[in-house]
Length: 117
Length: 117
Figure 1 (cartoon, chains in turn cyan, orange):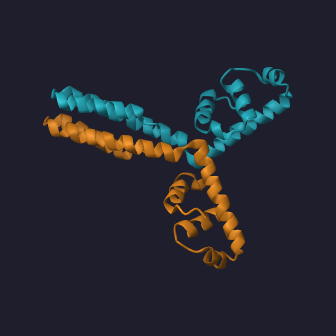
Figure 2 (cartoon, helix red, strand yellow; figure 1 turned 180 degrees about the horizontal axis):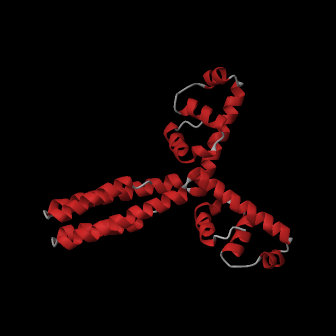
Figure 3 (cartoon, helix red, strand yellow; figure 1 turned 135 degrees about the vertical axis):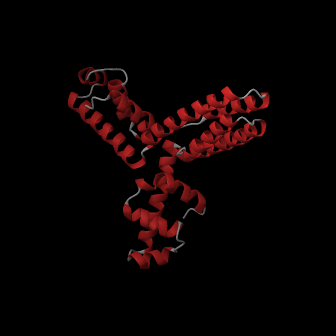
């Protein structure tokens, strides 16, 4: 299995909906709920090899889509930009006292937080 | 074929990379370069029915992915939020004169424009 649980969980966040129901179940048990292959095998009444194959297949599907669509990379890039924007908003705040300007800045912060990246 | 060329072009922007090379070619000729089915058929030496099937298949692939991932919807929602943010930035500008605050606002505008939505 892929040893990078964080990477796998992030990929799942973006592309998990493209897996089959069974792949989703196994993936979540292994990468989120920390079941071993043997435990998943017992729980779902599938051979250990079947569990392994399904996990490997799910991993390669998630990676294929990241390779094609690059949503995780885009997300990470955007998060960096958002941090910069937030720092700049704080910087503006430090230098102003006008009430209307401060209100508009709050609107900016609210809308920034509502962006779905 | 789908009569909404704009919708098809937007879907292609987001999910076109998931089509096969041949599907891409036919899709672009039809939806971007305004070729007729007959013209594509002649140009690529494929039957008219083959062109039709490939286009239909490409359309349903693009729609399938939008149904699963919703990137176009997310994009449109984010564009609305971005417009609000830009209006609020203009609003802040109207009420301040501090040089450092204005500089920080310019940084905000620059980073906002660099977001990949």
